[in-house]
Image 1: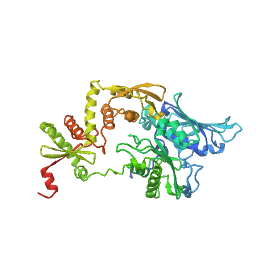
Image 2: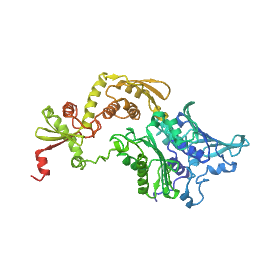
Image 3: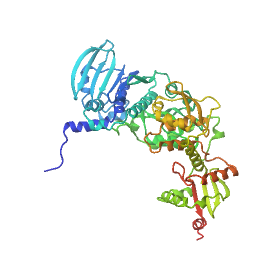
Image 4: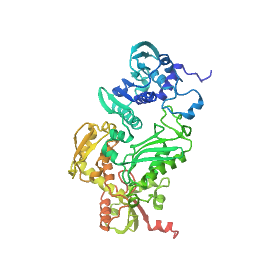
Length: 561
């Protein structure tokens, strides 16, 4: 007897639904996109238990015709496509015809809708994948759709949902993105009867960025408006030598669809290498418009990924647009760094070959037993490329990464003071008021507040989203305060050694940078302090600090032996 069977309809329908509906965010995404496609300019999202118990989306767009309702909840039904060739000219967010039947497969649905301004509407109740009730009601133009008890009949999927906080954070982040690209639409989000965010419709992307992220965030950005051939890019990117330590502030939209795509990410970050310090990442809110025929939005069940017909052309266009935005910057010629930070041949030789990095860790563990090696007896040779300290010690040549070395020094000092509750703090010279976006504030839980306080940040809450920084660790530069706090906020609470990761962030942000000239006494002090740390060979992020060459190594490389 054969082993292959045809799946039961209820089984394959659940599997198909699971590809579209993974979590509450999936439902919010599909329904909000439908509201936008219906030309609504007011969208209200109300959820309970972060969407696990219920999700309701109200909009004032074009509602359903009564006779279309049952069809809309059948699989493969859509108003967006008729023929396969229609994929060549997609201008809507939803088009698969799978969202509503997939949601219905794993939930109960209440629908109120009207396609007219006469107050004539329809109410429908769907349960157990069937239409149980349909009646005429008084209802204004628009749609109200409520999804109840998500995965009530799919317990395997339900048990894998994350905590309410995690699920809510996902929804908040999505709504922020949709609000950015759809600034002419008002958005509101309510969770458990508490208002989370509310953005009234505005006239420009700049106004929306101000609503979502605040004045300080907006002041770090410069505008891009660039067009070439059939491509157009507008939005905002970091100003010269600005930027943040988190790459999460990179928002890309292609033909009004929020996208994470490797070509866009690579073009942005590679172009900004010239304009930012080594450990900074650019902010961007960029809207790319290209002909529909040059992009495939149909490669992912949830439309989260796209594929460009000519990725290289997109890459070069983004690069030209960003470079062009800096041409009129008066500080450009004076301050631009043309060092592309190419890795030195020594770095390649020592660390890029398979297994060498691991060997170096083993070697460092062995050398820790050689305590005499870390005595302070050494000869300073100098500094290479204003980034690497070169010394002679114990008849060996040592190349020391000054940033990684200083990061290790800072970390060990901070860790000792942290666990002894002796971190030195200071008051800021001028008031530091930090405004957080809703997705940021939602991640600032009590545990993280306690860690920040123990590290040395005294924060007085002025409103739900703003804090006055009364005191800060002495090691921290005032201009780095928000960046540091955000980096710690976005650490996952369940990460191993959360406190160490938080301390390593502070140690890194306040360490001497590469391309920074040091005086001889400064170099000597760094080396002495490094040799007194718990691990002189690796920084807290496990990057190497020291490369060692014996005379034999050098003679072998120079073919003298």
